[in-house]
Image 1 (tube, one colour):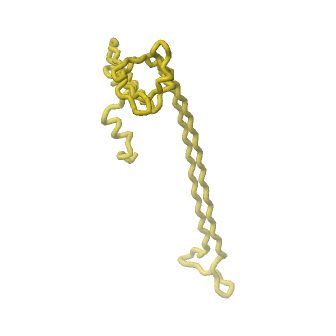
Image 2 (cartoon, helix red, strand yellow; image 1 turned 90 degrees about the horizontal axis):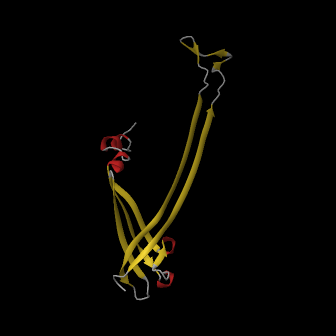
Image 3 (tube, one colour; image 1 turned 120 degrees about the vertical axis):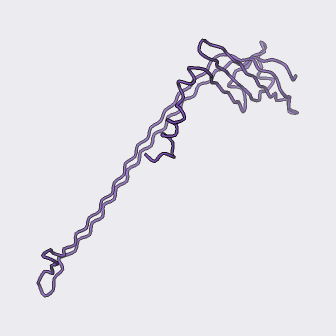
Length: 160
């Protein structure tokens, strides 16, 4: 029923790794024999008109990225809507006030009534279209963020 309260056991773990490598190489070479007329080398201001341009290009790129996250705990959510097919849309938010700031967990998603345990709990892995947000405010959150000027210098708008 709309307004019922359920407990969601958060058991989230993600791990992503990505690696890319690119190598580009190009070599151009042009050789011409010395320019001559009737066996005599043609000079201009004492220099041979020997043509021997050579071109070389090279590019090498490497990228590597990795990320690992886990979230464990529990949050109480309420049933916000019951769909005609019986699915329950749930939503909830939990705030924790700590020494140097506040942290929150926010969850929305769809659950099947048959996935709800006898103790009125459900695992977060059983929630469809789950949107789970975890974040914070305060001094610790601000320390982990770049300032606006640093973000500008690290952006695509700064050419260096």
